[in-house]
Image 1 (cartoon, helix red, strand yellow):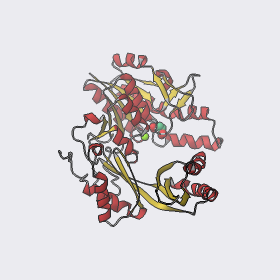
Image 2 (spheres, protein in one colour; image 1 turned 45 degrees about the horizontal axis):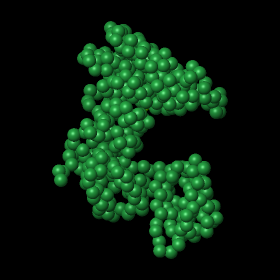
Image 3 (cartoon, helix red, strand yellow; image 1 turned 180 degrees about the horizontal axis):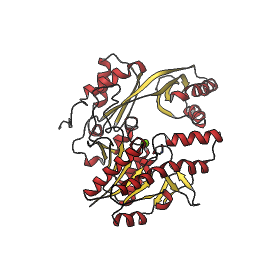
Image 4 (tube, helix red, strand yellow; image 1 turned 180 degrees about the vertical axis):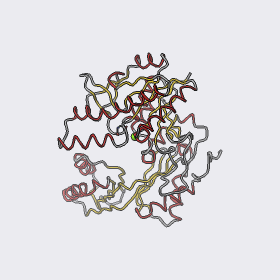
Length: 412
Ligand code: ASP
Ligand code: MG
C-alpha cells in the first residue's frame, strides 16, 4: 500500500462542483489501494479577497490577525471537500494546521515549518480515512495560527510527505507540468517528464506557475518525489526527483529567460582592495539584490565593474551607485534597462564541456550580441538585448533539440 500526499491549488477547488470532482478523483486513487492525504488551497481568489479586506481596514495589517484571517480560506475548502468525500460514500476528516500540529516559528505571514506531529494523521489514515489538511498554515509555540506566505500550500504538502515518508507528493494545478521553455513565446515547448531538484530550482521561472519554488528545496532535502500535474486531465505531468533516478539525462533540460533585469556599469574604477565593498555595501544596505557581477582586469590601475539588479530596483540602485562612483573617483556610470537574461539549464552539463560555446555560437548565428555571461555547474546565462528574447529562446530550444522526445546524452 502506498501513501500519497496530493495537493490541489485554488483553481482546482474554485467551486463546489470542482471540489466534488476532486473528491471523486481522490476516492478513485484511494480505491487503487493508496492511503491519501489531501492538502488544499483556498478557493481561487479567496486569499486575495481576504487580503483586500484587511487592507481596507488597516493600511499595514497586524500580522497575527492577518494569519488568523488568511487561514480561513483553506478551512472552507477542506471542510467542503470532506463533506464531498462523505457524500460520495467514502470517509474523510478535515484538519487545520494546529490540529495536526504543524509547528512553525513565530514569523507571521511568512512562517517556516519546524516539525510535524504525524500521530493524529496516522491514526486517521489507519482507520481508512482520507485526511485533508489545510494548506499554508501552522501553529507557533504560543498556539497562534501562522501562515507560510503566498503559495505556501505546496510547502505544506511536501513537508507532510517528508514527515510521513510518503511515496509521492502530487501537486495538482491548472497546467500539464513543467515545460522546456515558456510555451507563450516558443510553440515548440514540450512538457518535461523527469527533472532533477537542482534543475527545477534553476528553472524556477518556468515552474513558477506549477509549484512554489520554496517547496523544491524541501523536497530535495528529504528526497520527496514530486509529481506536478493537471487536475483537469489524467496525463502524467512532470516528476521532480533525485538526479540519480533520471535514466536519460539531457544536456540541456530547459531554457528560461528573465526580463526583470537591468545593467549598471561603472567605468574606470580604481583597482584597489576594498573598492568592491564600497560599491556593493550601500546597495545591499538598501535591500537591493545584485545578480551577476563582472569585473574586468586591465593593465592600468583602473577597472570596469558591471552588474545587474532587478528592473524595479534600477532607479534606486543608479542613484546610490552614482554617489559612490563620485566618492571613489570613478569615471562614469552607465546603465541599460532593456536587457534580458537567457539561461540554459541541465545537469548533463556537469560532465560535458563546450555547452557554453555551443550557446555562444547559436546566439552569434542569429546576430545576437552577448553583454554578460555567467556560468554555474548546471547553467549558462547570457545577458542580451531584450528585443531578442523570443529569437534567442527559440533558436536555443531548436539547436539543443528540446522539441524532441528524450534525446539522451551522446555516449562518449
Ligand atoms: N491560499 C494561499 C495563496 O493563495 C496559499 C496557497 O494557495 O498556496 O497564496
Ligand atoms: Mg500555488
